[in-house]
Amino acid sequence: MPLHTDSQYEEELQQLRAKVLEMGGLVEKQIGDAFTSFVERDSQTARAVIERDHMVNYLDVVIDEACIRLLALYQPAARDLRFITTSLRISTDLERIGDIAENICERAIELNQEAPLAPRPELPEMAEGARAMLRDSLDAFLQSSSDVSVTPDTRLSVGEKLSDFGSEAPDLALSVCQHDDRIDDLTAQIFNTMLSQMRQEPEYASRAMRILFIAKYLERVADHATNIAEMVIYLAKGKSIRHLSPLPESV
Amino acid sequence: MESQEKPPVGHAVTLPPRPDSGNGHDPTAQRGNVPSNTAPKGLDTVPLFGTCDTVEIEIRDVCLSYDGTTQTLKHINMDIAKGQVTAFIGPSGCGKSTLLRCLNRLNDLVDGCTISGSIVVGGLQILDQTLDVTDLRKRVGMVFQKPNPFPKTIYENVAYGPRVLGIHNKAQLDDIVEKSLRAAALWEEAKDRLYDNALGLSGGQHQRLCIARTIAVEPEVVLMDEPCSALDPIATAKIEELIHELKKQYTIVIVTHNMQQAARVSDFTAFMYLGELIEFGKTEKLFTTPEKQATEDYITGRFG
Image (cartoon, rainbow over all chains, first blue to last red; front, side):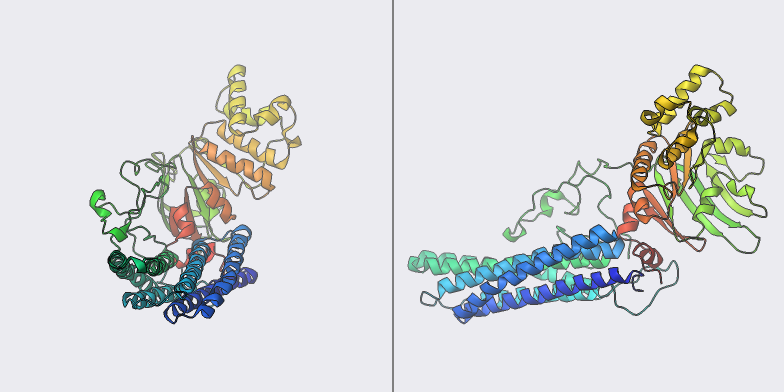
C-alpha cells in the first residue's frame, strides 16, 4: 500500500500506532509484575506497579486525544477509519487491564500480611494464559496495523481485490478469542476449590476470598485481551465477530 | 475478502443483555441459528434508512469516446436506485461527469462523440436516436457546478420551464413557483422579492434557484454536477439538507470531488477511475470497508 499523499497525516497515524504499542508493552509488563509480586510475596514490586499505573492512564488520555484529533481533522475513511476507531477501543481495554494489575497488587499486599496458603496450580496457568492472550492480541494488532503505513509501494493494478493484510494477524487474533474459554474454566475450578476450603476452614476465608479475587481479575484480563483481538479482526477484515457465539472457525 | 452474510446494514440494532457465557449458559439455545451479534428477532425488519427496491436507471455496457480513439467510458454497468442518492466519485478525468451527462444526453452537444451500450431511464431507452431529447431532459433535470440563473426575475426563472411545457395559467404558475421555491428551501428568502432580478441573489441562493427551476417541471431524476463546489460551507450545508429532502420525491445522481460530501449525502457511491467503474455499492460500506485496493487508496488519500 502506498503512503498517504499528505505526509503530515501519515506521520500522525504513525505516532498513534506507536503510542498504542507503547501502552500495550507497558500494560503487559504491569500484569507480569503484578502476578510476580503475588507469587513471590513481594510487596515492594506490588507498590511499584501501583505507582506506575498513572503512566498507563496518561497514555490512555494521549491516545484518546490523538484519535479524536485525527477524526476531526482528516475525516479518515476505510482502513484508516478502522485503525483509528480500533485504537480508541484498544486503549480503553488496555487501561482496564492496567487497573486490574493495580487490583492484583492491592490483594497481594493484603495477602502478604498473613501466612501463605498452599499455592493453587491453576493460578500460574491462568496468569500465563491471560498474558499470552494479551501478547498475541497486541502482536496481531502490530501486524495488521503495519499495513496502515510504512510498507513498500505495492500498489496493485486498478480493480484488483484488496489483498489480505498481514494475513496471519486475523488467525492469531481468532486463536486468542478461542483461548478465552480455557481461562473461564480455570476460574470456575478455583471458585469451587476456594469455596470448599472456606467451608472447611473458615479461618482461611479472608485469604481464600482474595485469591478468588485474583483469579477473577486474571479472567477479566483474558476478556479484555479477547476484546482487543476482536477489534484486530475488525481492523484487518472489516468484519465484526463481537458477541458471536459460537465463534467462527475462521475469518 | 469473502462477501459473507452480515448483520443488516443501516438497520436498528438493539442487543439483548449479554448472556454470561462463563456460567455454562448456552446463548444460542434460545436464539436458534441467529448469529448472536445480529438484531434480535422482530427488530431485523425495521429499516433505519431507506432501502433500495426499484431501479430507476439501468446502465448496460456503456462505452463512450469523444474522439473516436480514446475510450472515456469503458463498459459501464450499473443500476441506479429510485428515490435514492447515488454519488459518482473519482479523480479528474475518470469519466464521472461524462457518465452523468450521458443520463440526459448532454454529450450529444459534443461533436464526434460516440456512445454505445444501453441506458434505460424509467423504462425509456434513452440512447435511441429517435428519442425526443427535450422530453428526456424534462424527465431528467440537471443542476450544474456553476449556478446559471437566467437574467430574469426569480419568478420567471422558475416559471420558464412550465411555460415552455405549455402552462400559461397565472394561478397555476404561481402555485408551481411557490411549491418549487419551497422545495428548494428558498421560499422564505425569496417570497418578498419574486419580481427582482435573480442575479441579485447570493451564490448559494443562485444554486437553490437553479434547483427550484429544475424541479419546477417535475422531473423523475435530478442530476447534479458538483453542485456545491462554488459555495461556502453554509450554502453547501443547505444544499446537502435539500438533497436529503428532495430524495423523498426524486432520484438524485450527484458528481462530487468532495468525498466527505459523497459520504454525507449519498446512499450509494460509485468509484470511477480511468473510465472504469471500479466499485459501486452502499456508501457506508464503501467508506468503511471497500472491496478494491484502488478504492481504498483513493478514499484514504493515497494518491501514488
